[in-house]
Structures are given as structure tokens and as C-alpha cells.
Length: 449
Length: 81
Image (tube, rainbow over all chains, first blue to last red; front, side, top):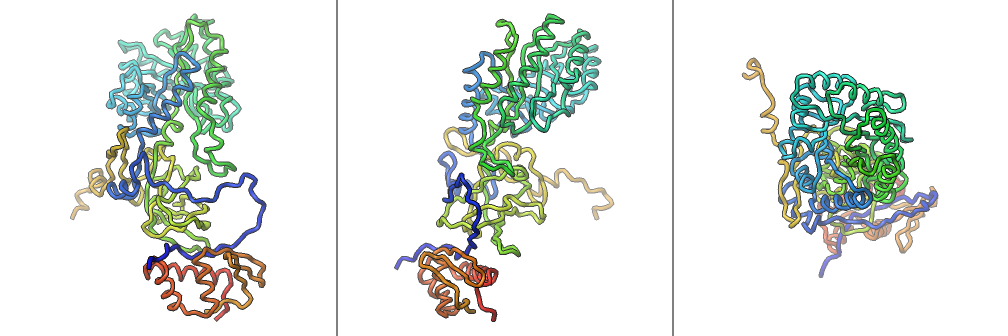
């Protein structure tokens, strides 16, 4: 006789409460393949946990983003935000797609060069640029976005002895109606600091002021804030034209577009509230076309979007280590995926999906990672199916920031693989081992015996 | 181990505890086990029945059964022994 399919017995208390008018679905969704590659096979071949980057998804998302802008504005250039995901294979996919590189440190700058990005297609942002970094960037005719007056004067000093004129822009911070206002980077618009910096640069006659840059914040769900930012940068540009008869070559609107992940505390899922690329493009290009640029001096629009271009392409696959009961009767499930690898679980309610499930039954569950640390919580409370030890899980939308902000803490960082357009898998970053750390550590002689 | 006398179990797996006024829902295997407990079956009888009926191994079921009983205790649905 064939036996029936087994699932864990459960009893759940029914809590009467105010019904949710949006009525989220209760069926258990599964994720058993990525780009037609079975998740089980990936875990078997590359171990658990493992990050997966889908090149087809990167290409599809990039195409959506670029066509939203290029269909509305004639001069558009994307620059890949290295800090969002600077694994070389990922950066090279963006380069192949036509992206420049946007970097914020000497380390990232070298990565961009090593990935074959020409110097004049590297945008160098951020508050931390050493004199050596700046000399190299000037030599390579990279676009240096000045963050503060100390950097501005360093560049003017370096320009005195350089054979090449530095190509510079200033980063401008401003009130666009977004809270919190990011005023720690760049020069302020409203108090006149940005205009003062531009004057200082123009009067020096030692640098080429080629652009204006802003980055108004992160996970911006109000496209109109970008329109406000464009109009303020356009004001600065027209002032430069009027006073110095100088036309800038580009306006860099930065990044900050939201992804479909759900922020903690949000009432509705991110996939329902995230603006489309078209919505951002409409606001930004509409403001650019309305500004007072002469038709033959329209600046190139540079976009440094990171999160919105890569989040959907990243997956983190793992395994259930154990189930436990908490003191109040709630179930907890321990995964081999923790905050060490999934750094974004500090601010997102990540969707954790079973790879396979034999049941539609769920229980209120806390999902913990494997670390022996109280902070290691992947989801504090989620209706989760009745998985057993050894069952596999998949987490969607982890492409942004996790593979750069991850921590080497308590255990190793895992393999990262890429699925190419022919659906072949490739390791693009090897899992760490004890040897990785032994190579870095030095034991003083007196402790060796 | 004994289920409190006045606990009501519906055909569709709803449980009502008139002592507290609380209601609970069971999945189908949970309902089956609770009915076996109510009819006075021992742990080994229940285990024998489940392992013969369902595709489960002994250790998995024992772990899940003990967890289920802990939840019945947590919800105060069992008589104090």
C-alpha cells in the first residue's frame, strides 16, 4: 500500500483581529529553479549557502531601465555603482552592456581599471580620495566629483604640477522634500556653498568643470524628488553659463531608485509600491527638458543606479539547520543563512521561500541565522511552511549590497555563482576557507612555539 | 496523557476550549493525532498508526510528536498529570 505524504502535526491558536483589507495571499510559493537551473542542483554542486547572480535578469533589468530613459531623452549614460556589487564578473556584465563605472574609493577605482573601464569612463565619487588616488584619476582624465573644500583645494594644488587638466564636477546636496536630507556629502545648494565652490573652481582656471552631481538619498519612492533635484542643478548650470559663459557637459542625478524589496515597517510589499523605471525617467527627463538649456547644449544625463539594477538578479540559497520552540510557543527555524551573509535583512523583510513544499500549512515562525549571536534574525515573524531539517530555502532580491557589505564573522563567506545567458553556471567568487584567513594573519615569533 | 474532557474537535480541524474560550486550528495529521489522544491511545499506538499510514521515519515523527504535545501543553489543552 502506498503511504500518504507526511507533514508535521500542528495546532495554531486562532487570533480574532481586524481583518487586513488588502488580504495578502496565504498560499505557499516555492522557488525551485533560477533561469531553468534547478536550485537543488546548484546547492549540491556549490554547497550551502550559496549566492546566485542571474546574468539574464541583469540584462533584462538594464534594458528596462535604459529604454525608459533613452526613449525620453537623447543623451543618457548609465554608470555602474561599484559599491552595490563589485564582484568583477558582475561589473564586467554592466561594462558589456555599456555602463561606465562609478567608484567611491581607491580600491574600487583600481577594480574598475582592472575590469578594463577606460579612465575617462570612471566617475570618482565619495569623501575618501587620497592624493595618490587623485593624481591617478587626473592622469586618467577620470571624472572627479568633489565632495568637500579640502578635496577641492587638494585638486587645485595637484593641478599646478599636473600636465593634464583635472576633469571635475561638484556633488551638490539639497532639500528635495526627502527625509532625511543627505547633507553630509557634497556642497549645499540652499546656503550657497555649491555656487561658492563652482566660483572657486571657475576662477582658478586650472580645472575643467565638466558636470554637476547629486545623490538625494536611498530607496526613494517619490520620483518627483528627482525632478526637484534636476531643477536645482539646472539652476546652477544656467548660472555658470550666464556668469562664465561655460556650458557643463553632464548632469549626474546619482542613484537611490527603490527595488522591489519590502522595507521593515512598510504596510504593503515593495513589489506593489516600488515606482517603475518609467516613473523615475518621466520625472527626471521632464525636469531636464523644462530647464533653460540651449538645444545644442543639452547636458548628458548620467544615472548611477545600483540597487534597482541588480537586486532582482541576486538569490541566496540555503538549508534548514533545525526547528525549535521559543518560550512563548512560537516556532523558530534556524537557517544556514544569517545576517553575516544577508546584511540587508537588517532593513528588509526578505521573502524566504521553500525550494519544495509538500504542504500549504504555515506557522508563525521566527527565522534565525546560524550565528551564536542574538542579532542574527533573518525574519522576526513570518508565516512559514513546515520545513524539516535539511529542507532547502531560497531568498530573492539579494543582489544589491549583500555581496559587498557581508561580514566575515564566525564563519566563512560562501561561493558566489553566476548563471550565464546559456544557463551555464560559473563560480565568480570562491568560498572562503581557513587558508584564506591564515594567509592574512601574522603570528609574532614569540607566540609561535 | 489525557485531553481535557470538554475540548471540542470539529470535523474540519477546529478546536474549541470552553475553559478559556480560545479556538485553534489543526492540520489534518494534527487532527488525526488529537482524536487518537482523545480516544485514549498511547504514544506507541499513535506512532505505530502514523508510521504505517504516512511516509515518515520514526525519529522525525517522534520529534514532531513531542513538539505537538508541547504545544498542547502550552495551550493548556491537556489534563494535569
